[in-house]
Image 1 (spheres, rainbow, N blue to C red):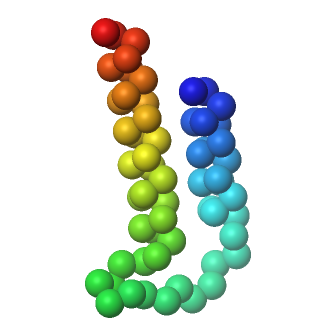
Image 2 (cartoon, rainbow, N blue to C red; image 1 turned 180 degrees about the vertical axis):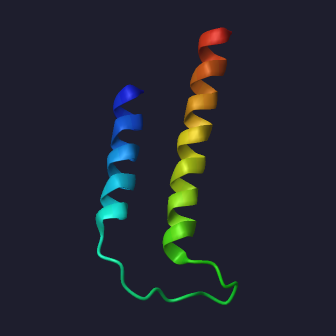
Length: 57
């Protein structure tokens, strides 16, 4: 589990280090990179919640 968290944090750091360039916006006006990061964060949050529930059961 710790390796998964480290992997996600490493991916987030890599995304932060990407040179800034103009981003294209979809029809909703949401930044695609922000959406991708939010999806990853949500996935990690769900995994952590599942792990906590599993350990507490």
